[in-house]
Image (cartoon, rainbow, N blue to C red):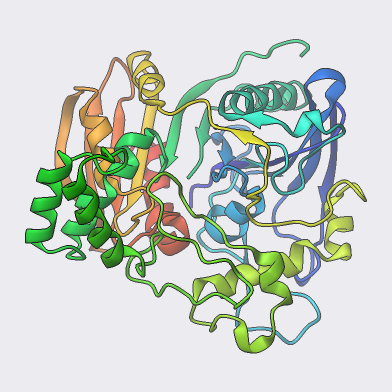
Length: 443
């Protein structure tokens, strides 16, 4: 089976410091893959320390593609992508007998990659000054680029590998063999992506035809930034909110789990994506308030317990005292949103001939596939292969469409039954998808 090279970053350390990890608490025996962790210093005097995980290809490290995976949020840890989506390890949810969560090998791992904790303040990444924690969309992108340059200078054996940037983004500059990019249920244009939640809800039958049509007409199709003086639109949106507020946005078919009494309720907000609750309170809640094992939030508890264990942090080479507590998604970042659309950047990549794989779980209402298709259509690209199903084990795994450019082109694919982080919900199908695309096969 083909395997890619995975680099998981979590930003931290002066210059580049690295360790080869042979064993991990919770996993029985030696790791069956090569795991490197470390810190890369970024910014003035290497003030920002970005922590990363690098998993080398289990097939042919010198030839397989190299992938930089950026977990979204902003503020979500690379470890979340590693253990819940594409990494070589998963938690053994059925085994709670030990004093630490048990780990198993993931048969659907995408390996040979770097996973990055970005921006600073995510996962195990940290800054040595308070000013270093102030970041933004544009700064996070610049830091990611600086990280990649420094890491490749320190690992010149991978300079010739085909490089892909994926995610749910000093000194001598290396020549990067950039081949393309992957975007999974990505927030690309706030207006388009958030606005598409209403038509998506209608398509999923959460809104009646009558309610949708009168809301569309009264709001002129603009739900995110509706005119506050438009009374009819405002009243219709209140009804829409009432219909949607109990729906689980990351995957609309899964239950929306109850929160412990100490949690502050989050009202549905069109202008934000609620990716994470307050798990510090969650972990301290009485057992009677914890979610049922059937709730997906239950699985996230394993990562909090595991990543905050001192034995784990010592094994990973985490610098003692650099972070007060590991959290899956840090919602308290000093973060400024200064890029509200990256559609123009994607168009430029396409025009330059880079390959692109854009995929969406078709049951995600955080960033619905309808919004993704809308901004793709706005690029007016030439279709080389029209809409058709793609299959895994003889069953429909989703639908895809291909667009041409001077070289590789762009592929958009839906993942049938997938949620906001599609590989988390459909690991087998997503492995087949990425394997075929990286190998230049049709989906």
